[in-house]
Figure 1 (cartoon, each protein chain N blue to C red):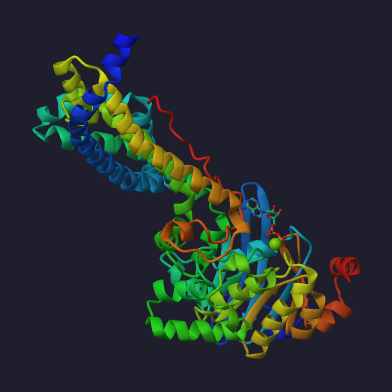
Figure 2 (cartoon, chains in turn purple, blue; figure 1 turned 180 degrees about the horizontal axis):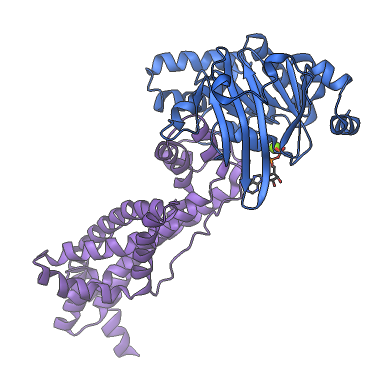
Length: 258
Length: 264
Ligand SMILES: Nc1ncnc2c1ncn2[C@@H]1O[C@H](COP(=O)(O)OP(=O)(O)O)[C@@H](O)[C@H]1O
Ligand SMILES: [Mg+2]
């Protein structure tokens, strides 16, 4: 037991490893944010294709989403790192990681965004169209702004999962948080490096978890709250809710094991 | 079948002759609409001329909403013709977004945009669709909100308004596109009784300003007072049309009589 504590919870080891971990965490954050940006942008395009009435637009989106959600992320990572160079695409490890994680996230975000869009009452689109707005104008100015606050909680959840999933990139030599911890542990043979890594992951994810709970609480308060609000987030989650039940917080959330 | 004045007696007139009417705003010719197997509109013929306030009554499920929705192509008609100011809106290549700017519609459920203020609701389409300068759009928007008696609510969000106020915003929002005709689909049916009058008053005001209106309603008092024409619709056809007083007090058709005896 003492041996365990000495190897895993050693204060001076933790202090020593911290700069290494922070260095890795920087990469983790960069990869996660960049991948989420690709994920939301790509997910939006996929979602719009997915709800199209035209089969020729809908089908590719369905295939894409099924493919990325139906295979292990770790496999997608390995394929990208081994196959892309064969096509003459030589990206550095971090960029490749961002692209794969982004493409993967897009598939999940597409389903969240689709559910968000579909949760807006059909009368909204009709009202917008009846005023002469095009389909895309109606989406942009009427449907999507209402979708934002409904999808923010599940998208943030997704981002939390994404932060943790970047650890997968440690197998392809991306110097992110877990990779740095592993190297330090391998070199020093003291496991506090892992403990430290876990604490750094928690430092990133816990605030976001709280944020999601806060957003979900605000959303479920719904119509009761019309008081003018200060601050961007507060305002976003305060305007009176519209008719239609909405799928607040109930989007197709991906499970951690993908 | 119809006792309406001659200019409304359009059933047997060929299409090319129909489309020469100068003051015609909406002309519907032999309109059919089918949802899968269900025949909803079975040959509608109707003409609305500039300045008309045409009231449509009829039992639930008779196709009144479907007819209105076909007029601005929220619903695609199965066959027949609809002319808006002489243009066949079902012709291939017809510009549906341009058409919709000429035809304002107000729904039973107000469908205001909840993320925008009252002013934002009224200004959105003129800004994005007509791309008019913001100052001018805002001026028009405020004027239209004043028309429906809501000058003091411009900066408020829809959820903070009563149903009657929301519906009046919806009217102002449709007016903002400066349409040539306004369609109203049972706009007071979702309202608490005490809120009905303010909406009807706003519509009455519009009618007095000379707006061309096609109004589906159960408000017989309004229909009689404001309507210049009334039509009775049943099972996907227009059964009878006349001046409102005539139609309500002296219906000719048995189905009209039977319907009126139930609702009056
Ligand atoms: N989108 C639709 N799909 C299938 N049936 C519909 C649809 N819209 C309306 N209907 C049917 O068409 C008929 C006429 O409906 P509607 O035009 O709403 O009548 P009204 O407005 O006179 O009450 C009803 O039987 C209704 O169920
Ligand atoms: Mg109806």
